[in-house]
Image 1 (cartoon, one colour):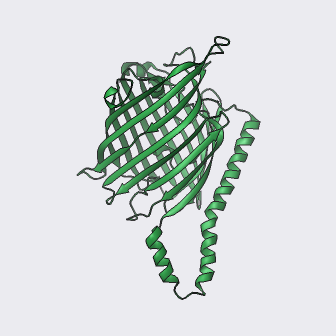
Image 2 (image 1 turned 120 degrees about the vertical axis):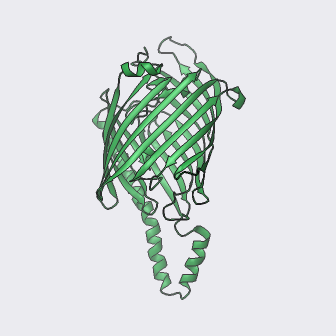
Image 3 (image 1 turned 90 degrees about the vertical axis):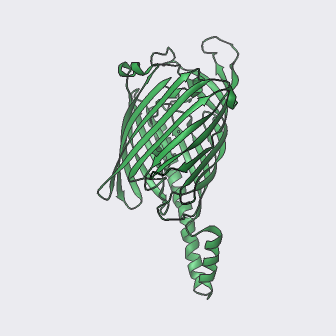
Length: 393
């Protein structure tokens, strides 16, 4: 996954494309560093008789397939604008070839909307993938647009700017169930948001309005995961379901109940094509803050453009591995929001689609990076720079 809808004009496209090319060049250079080091070591090995002992010792320290990966990530999307992020990932060694890759990382980002964030995360798979533990920690300031709530919001065409100083802490612990590929456990969610609205466009010289609030809840989580990779799947299914009661009991200011469902399936077609579809549903009862309402999850729209108690999204993607580490893709989908479930059938569908390009940065762990160009119903073009599989989070 705010302010700044990217305009559909040639200048912006050229600038974004230049950022993408520079980013790919830098990624290729970084990716080449281990190869250059390997070539140097290879030459030294010819002069040393104890090479195998040295190699064995290094593998014991770092792991045979572990890897530290620095990644510069250009940013350009309608939610937070255009800028740059940087991440440092440690890909832990795999216990078995088919096990998911445990990853630890730190990151930071800044965009031309003066939005910024720093954070760290750990996504771990333990005891032969019988135990899964994930913990992200994020702090940042985001300059966003508030489009109102509901499909007929009067702010849809004239959103109000606001600033959200945000901190998030969302640990999750899952344990394998007796049934193959099924996991269950708990998740704690804590979000603190200091939101200040700029209403000077409506009332000249008006002061900023807003307050600091937080939401927190301890919920149940269950996951079905038969994917062949957690970074870039080409087969299998993935279901992620959380049900969380938020309230004062957990440290929050709001009392409501929220259910989030995510489901994706991956179908390999011959050796070079993969078809993917994903379904999302978010359902809320009670008094939730506007910044945690249900929303449509589609590339092409700002993250908070469509907010309500209920949101559903469907999307599909076709991938073509056309040359060695390069993959092209095309995608499309639509989403609806409503105040009640029985209103979904009459709600408007918001469509978006586009295409993208990916490069496999780390072959053994199937870590891909790349760019997506999207077009939404409003006719605007947006750019998303991706690390990993957008449909698997």
